[in-house]
Length: 124
Image (cartoon, rainbow, N blue to C red):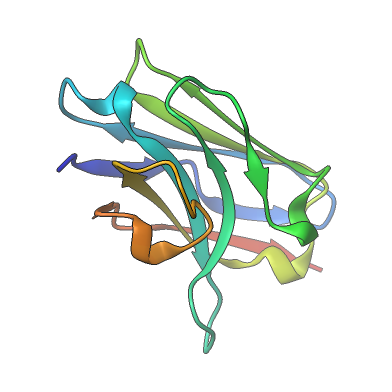
């Protein structure tokens, strides 16, 4: 497994931007599919975005498509989530996760390793 640590969360106004980072440990980081999930208060954790080992084939949940961009830098063992045009409904704890498989990257059951989460709050 890989250890993951998220950073970059915070408080931002509607329409603002944040960039989340997720740093991974271990030499195998570049082989993992990486995903971002989020959990709003009182709700289940849900898929946000995923990217394969090479940085290709990004996949997005419909409500963030066109506003969020997932990317990775395998030389730094880091995956990013650039979030633009933020809305109050984006408020949640954001988690990054690593999967050793490439299929079903929207399914949290496919991920073996999880970070501790970072809080994103969007004020109206």
